[in-house]
Image 1 (tube, rainbow, N blue to C red):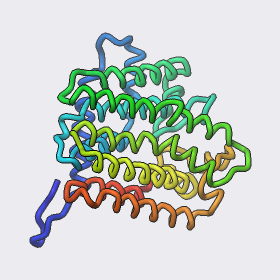
Image 2 (image 1 turned 90 degrees about the vertical axis):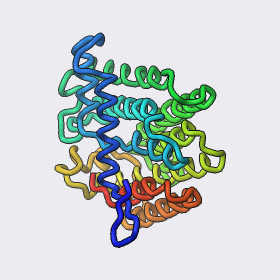
Image 3 (image 1 turned 120 degrees about the horizontal axis):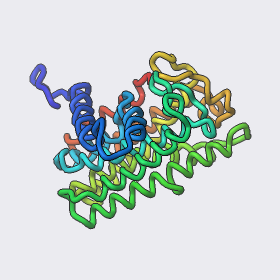
Amino acid sequence: IIIQKNLKMTFDFNAYITMLKEAVDNALNAYFPQSGEIFQRLNDAMRYSLFAGGKRLRPILCIAGAEAVGGDRTTVIPVACALELIHTYSLIHDDLPCMDNDELRRGKPTNHIAFDEATAILAGDSLLTEAFALLSLDMDIDKNQQLKIIRIISGAAGAGGMVGGQMADIASEGRAGDIKMLEFIHRHKTACLLSASVEAGGIACKGTKEQINALKNYGDNIGLAFQAMDDILDVIGDVKKLGKEPGVDQQSGKLTYPSLIGIEDTKKMIHTLINTAKKDISPLGDNVRPLIALADYIIARDN
C-alpha cells in the first residue's frame, strides 16, 4: 500500500501486512473449514495451530516476491497458503516431547498439550501432505514453472533443507560447535524455506533469471538474519511478547549465535545480512518496497 505524504510516496508496511494476512487467512479458512470431510478431531487440531496467530511471514514473502517482478498477488495465494501449512506442520512437530518439548506456542498450549501427541503428529503429517495438494492445484501459473516451484519448496522443506537442519540442530545439542556448523543449521532449518517462499513468488509470476537470483539471495540473507534474531530473543525476549518461555535454547544446550559470539556481535551480523539483502534486490525498482520493509521488520521485531 502506497500513500502520499508531503508530496512523497511512503509505503505503509503495517497496512500491507494486515491486508495480506487477512487474504491468506480467508483462503486458509476456505481450504480448511471448521467442519467437513476431514475427521473432526484431526481437523480441529490442524486448525488449532494454523489459526493460532502466526505472523504469516512465509506467505507474505511469497506474495511480495510475486509483486517484486510485477505479478498479481492472487496468482500465488495457493502457493502462499501451502508454505504456511508446511511451516505450521514443522512447529507442531518441533514442539513435541521427543523434539523441543515445548508447552507454549504463541501464548497458547502447544498442539500436543491441547490435544495429545498422536493427534499432534497426525495433524502435522496432514498439513504437510495438504500443502502439496495445494501446490498441485490447477493454477494460473505455467505448468513448468509450477513444477519448478514444487521442486524448490520440497527441497527447502525436506532432508536437504528444513528437516535436515532440524536433525543437525538436535545432533549438536550439548556439544561444542563452531560458526560453520551453526550457519549450516540456521540456513537449513530456517533460511531455506524463507528463501524458497520469496523465490517461488517470483517464479510463479514469470520473473527473469536475474530477478529470481536477486530474490533468492535476498531470501538467503534475511532467512539467516531472522534465525539469528530468534537466537537473541531467546536470551532477552519477553514471554508475553514471544508467546513462549525464553531461555529454552540455553537450557537444552543448543548452538546459537549469542552463545558463540555474544549478543552485540550477533546484532552486527544481522545488520550486515539485512543490508546485503536490501542491496540484492535494489535493482528491481519500486516494486521491492514491501521486501525492504520486511527486512527492516526482522531487525525491529520482538517476537
